[in-house]
Image (cartoon, rainbow, N blue to C red; front, side, top):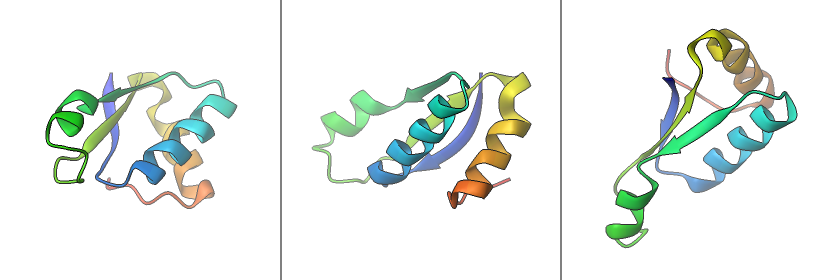
Length: 71
């Protein structure tokens, strides 16, 4: 799996996951437990991972859905 996006904003993660699910693209969220351990105050970013073959399509979905990603 490769990183699609990294953010401290849980609403961005929720939107991205919904867009990916709607397009039948599997994703996995990393660093959730670390975020909870720091008290969910948003210091540590969460990462959203997708299968490498799905990355180009996932990036297009994020762009079309208004989700800003790096790369």
